[in-house]
Length: 111
Length: 118
Image (cartoon, rainbow over all chains, first blue to last red; front, side, top):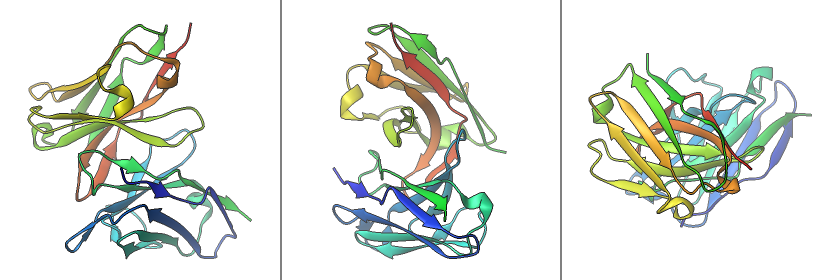
């Protein structure tokens, strides 16, 4: 099984850039497709898809969110960070679909 | 508007059963694979089970194989999760999701809380 590793927390100041990383235990790319997705979850709410296939913005997601990476290393960037962005962020791979795995989550906190 | 609404959660004793339902609307249900994802209190997200659009194939994480059954009724646009032989470690909020391997899980329900305790 592919294991996804994320740092547990990241402290950032409002208006600054936040970079959240996710490392996979093996490649999650197939051909030109990087099968890594990112979700945001606020307390008491269901997760929301932010980025699919590593770098594609989901519908309705602000352009301050972006994603990059390939193979085993992926990054979610928020620039600039707003107060509404304080949440936990999860990466997820679908390389082994229809079985899926999530990273442990990175809690974005205010510095 | 795509909507997924779970129901059927609650408090259940260890070893007993519970069945969750997820009513879908706003899209052609029969065109999509569906899945259940759970989240134990203060923990991260964990994929539980998936089902193909026709219902012909199902997939489970190892810890629920043989105890949980995912199914669907395309005529009713409803997804189900039958949970048998429940354990305390199954205590979680269970989310119904719409999935595509190339676009992630792009729709989520609000979640159904399941507590397994004597």
